[in-house]
Length: 380
Image 1: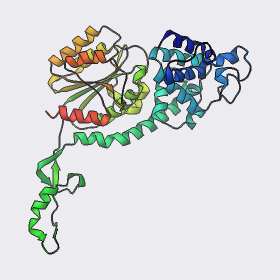
Image 2: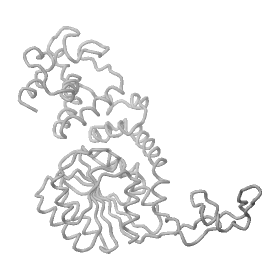
Image 3: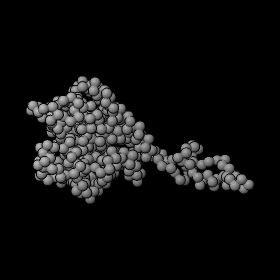
Image 4: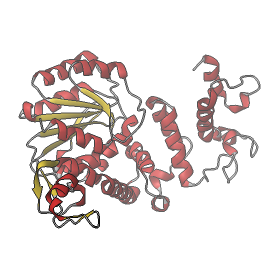
C-alpha cells in the first residue's frame, strides 16, 4: 500500500476529491470497515445527521449503534480479514471502549437471538477477554451448537481413517456396501452363469474384511491461539475431542501464545477447550515446541502436530533448534498453516520452508485430511 492510500484510509471517503482511491477493491473494503466505526466521530463532534460516514445505514441517526447483530458480526469478520492482527486488536478495543459497540459482550438477550456459526464463534473467541459474566451462558450455548455441528460433519470421516483399510486378502461375513468385492463375487459365482438369460445369478456376494488398526502412538497437538488462527483453533478443538475418544491412542493438547497451556485434561470436551482459550497476544512457537518435546515419552512412537501461522515472535534460531532436536529423535512432525480448509492461509512461508528443511512436513489441511495423514504415518 502506498503512502497516498494510507492517508486516504486515515481521512476517509470524504477525501475522495483530493485523494482518489488507487488501491482497488480491497482498499475500498478497508475504508468501508473503518467508516463503520470511526464515522461515529462525526456525530460525536456535532456533525449534522447523515453527514458522517458512519451514518449511512445506521437506522438510528448519527453515531447510532442500531445495526443488526449479524451486521456487527460481519463487520468484525471483515476487520479480521483485512487488517493485521495488531491493528485488529486496536480497532476492536476502540469499538468496545470508545464507541460503545458492546452488544456482543454484554447483552445475553441479543446473543440469544443470533444464529450460531463458525464466524460468530471466531468473533466471540477474539473478544473472550472482554465478555461480561452475564453472557457466558449464551456464549457456552453458541460454542456447543457450533462444536456439535462440526463434530457431526467430521467424526465419521476422521474415525474411518483410523478404523482400518480394506484387506484385499481376506473376506468378511459382514455385508457392508462400501467393502463389496465385485471381482471376487464374480469369480465365486461363475458356476451360476445363466447362459439363456445372459446373466450371473449371485448366491454369495463377497465383502472385504477391514484391518482393525490400533495405533499405540502419542499425538501431541500444539495449537497457536494468536488472533489470526481462530478458525484453526475451533477445528483443532473438535479434532482433539474426536482423537481423544479413539482407543489405544494417547492425545496431548497444548495451546500457546507467549505462554504454554496444557489442556489435555479437557481435550475430550471441545466446548471446555474453546472456553479455555484466549485468542490474541504474541507468539512464541519455540517455547511450545520445546514443551511438546518435554512431554513426549516415546519419540519413535510420537507425532507432533503444530498448528500455527509460523510468524515467530522470538528468535527463529531457537525454534529451528527445537525442531531439529525432535527430528533427530525421530518424532514425526507436521506443521499446519491451517486446519479449517482455508484455501490460501496467510503464513510465514520462509520460516515454514526452513522447518521443512529440518524434517517437518508443511501443509494446510482439513481435519479429515489430517486424519488420513496420521493414519498413514502411524501405519509405517
